[in-house]
Length: 487
Image 1: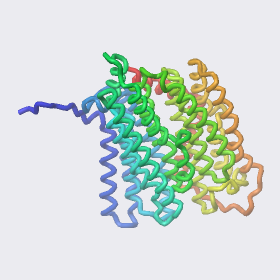
Image 2 (image 1 turned 90 degrees about the vertical axis):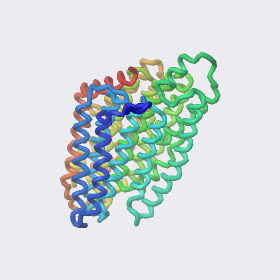
Image 3 (image 1 turned 135 degrees about the horizontal axis):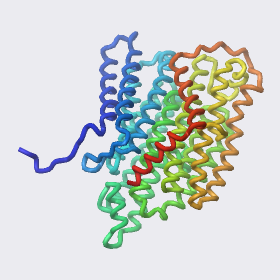
Image 4 (image 1 turned 180 degrees about the vertical axis):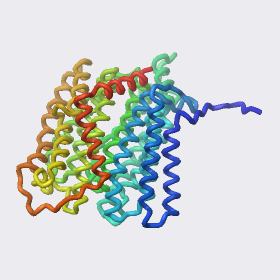
């Protein structure tokens, strides 16, 4: 007997996502049965699951498949983002293990939440429907709300979680309302069918309803990637959350939200590109400027990196404004570049916190370059890359983004981007001045580099320099992802 309605549900296309979810549940079970002294085994189980999923995702490169009634897609774009998410998650787990051990915090649920958050990111990158897109955002967000407040004995952590939850719930409601309005205007939530409706509509569409829905979806995405004026939560949450979670939030979830941003606006709203292009140009210019100018005034390193994250969201938005293959390639490559160099910067912050000598304030970095030469050299590399100085990956990423803007006629936006990069040099290189040209206020204690943090630092440093000197393969992968997007 066969069912009258059959929905294609190929499990192979979402196998990496299923592995991540399954290992997340296994970690929760292991946390229940393991004695307290063996809780750190949960970290090894979680990292093993991430490596397994990464290997499966790598094997899916070049495959293209649609499933689940056209709501989910496997293509080079989703595969590339899945590899980015899994790689950044593995690095964050490496950074978390010494932190959790030092803080004496239970570990099982921490790694499970990170895995569930990663599964939400993977669903976002594969979504071809506004419904699955919303589900991915919620799975991602709910896990992050809990992780931001993971240190229950810390008032700052609790405050960060509450602020993030309240504003995030409000943004999710706006996004959902935008999805409803878009469905009302087009009669579908599938991204491809929305594009077909906008292109081949037999009669006039309700333009007001459609534009209102698109604007609300834009607001929802703008909150997730911290675009001005929906950025105010970022510095408080970044400062209050545990530092490994701050690093995690600044990397994978931001890239996941931009992946959804790319699919929604390049595919679904691509036919009405002229209606949102100018608005995104203004938002990009404001985001870059506000982020960089506000970062100058910060004395807390995590707040400085938070405003830096806002500015970099503005840079990525240039790629969406430019559009086409050049803009999409630039945006995707810059997301990879930012993930690598930002995780490296946070690895240094976590390492300096680990010495119990302070690592949150700028003054804590005085004399670090001479007291800890390798740590100082690593942080210098990441700051140089974030500011966009060659031969680092940050320079190549900005070169492609600004080049795409010039090629598509958005020269004023490219000029604003270049000027903002010049502004950012001040607060990035200020750390170098402190490390090498200021005496510490007290004798700096010796620092022991845990093996996990050392591996994370080595990987991010090699990638930051390697992708800058030899960016070819990474750029080709980004181009392949964009071709899948437009196909």
